[in-house]
Amino acid sequence: MQNVALGWLVLNHHQLGLLAGRGGVCGVHPFLLFTLFGGVVADRVNKRRLLLVTQSVMMLLAFTLAVLTWLKIITVWEVVVLSS
Image (tube, rainbow, N blue to C red):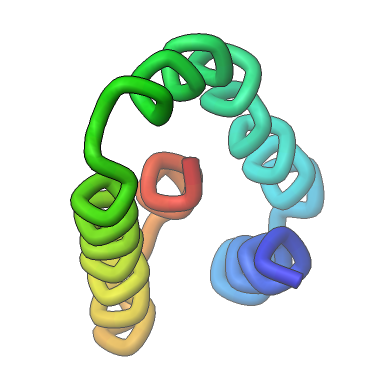
């Protein structure tokens, strides 16, 4: 659902279908790069603290995306960076 909403956001604000697809592809790269490292970290640290930190960071990124969208100053690179 998130990828559909981000693609719609790019398409709605910038009318560029190619960039909407590119944003979805760029969202996959962090999973490919950090999966093994994330597994090691998850095995070695306190699970509750890790969950609180990661969810707080995700909340701040989502809030930033929402504010930039509401102010209508969002650009394609900001969508890609904030969704990654």
